[in-house]
Amino acid sequence: MVNSNKHDSLPVPGPAALAHSQTLEALIAAAIVAGDGWLPFDRYMELALYAPGLGYYSGGSTKFGWRADDGSDFITAPELSPLFAQTLGQAVAQALQASGTRAVMEFGAGTGKLAAGILATLDALGVQCERYTIVELSGELRERQQATLAAACADNPGRLAKVDWLDTLPDHFDGVMLGNEVLDAMPVKLYQRRAGVWHERGVTLAGLDAGPGAAGVDLERNLAPPDPALSSQPRLGWADRVIAAPAPALAELLAEIEGDHDYLTETCDAAAAFTGTVLQLLGRGVLLLIDYGFPRHEYLHPQRSGGTLMCHYRHRAHDDPFLYPGLQDITAHVDFTAIAQAGLDAGADLLGYTSQARFLINSGITDLLGQLDPRDTQRFLPAANAVQKLLAESEMGELFKVIGFSRGVDGRLASFERGDRSHAL
Ligand SMILES: C[S@@+](CC[C@H](N)C(=O)[O-])C[C@H]1O[C@@H](n2cnc3c(N)ncnc32)[C@H](O)[C@@H]1O
Image (cartoon, rainbow, N blue to C red; front, side, top):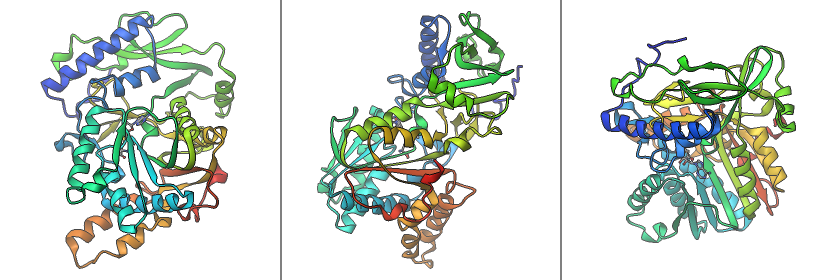
């Protein structure tokens, strides 16, 4: 079905951004042709987000910010308020002390604000951190992080000297590892049950045969581009392939979904593999991962029949991953049961699993807010508003979760002491 009005309310990018998107779309089109007319969705998402120099995270999009008119698409917790980094800094301090380690590693560090806040908090608490390593896939984000940290450490060059950057994982690490909203940015596979038959959703081009087993190709779903400059572009669309013989793990997972109604869901092998890999290289220490998602039984709830894939463009959420490839974020919620299983399979201990609200309260966010003077309205009001957003059930407090793993650490962390929901995984 064609719905040419669907994107009318979204802002149209300028000519340079459209040209950038066209170049990426041509690269994706070539990958589809090379794949006999069909690309699994996880490969599409990987190219759309991470194709060197062109993908959303590897190109020059603004990404993080407050408003569409600053060119940004979404806001994350470290951008909302310095209290998030300060609170996380307190949790990291506990974890460094509990593990007897002196190094921090952050994955996918965004603008660098979280790193700057954690380092300042550790210094203020007198907790030793000899090295803060950022693992960053994007050269452009690395430059932004360097600028943020240089500005934040202008009066403390010693603090800045502790920070280094890697673009691949090291072989071994002792210390505290953390990632905020990293798992949700990893490529997912899409599975669709239609008329009781499971298909893998992939991507094809108008006019191409999507290969053997293709069914229900719905090329019209990719809409007329809002800018005539794009009319010569290859047109991306969905193509679903019947899964003839699902691997046992996939068959087991799909069998968990009750009913026989039409249903769309995702799996993220990349997020589970990432968790397993980083925990295997952790000799002694803690891993904290913060993201939006649910345990498996909620993730695969019969009523969640549309899946969780979501796109963000100029602070509007929508469900079309083919709009402006390279200019918009594509994301899916995290299956925390899969993440917990990956950690246990890697031989780590599960420290805890709780809501972001509970984790931040346990780690002292309300005490930090209480230290601000309410009469200083310029500082207090934005901080109180941000804390409300971070903690409220209807905002980020409940949808976002924190999962923690450890290796070689005795005892628990206060950050998971109250409200632990590990039993729900
Ligand atoms: C939604 S952004 C979050 C950025 C930042 N942590 C924040 O909260 O503002 C997702 C980040 O995860 C990074 N990322 C994705 N896969 C990664 C991986 N395997 N290793 C490290 N970073 C990764 C992306 O490059 C991107 O910078």
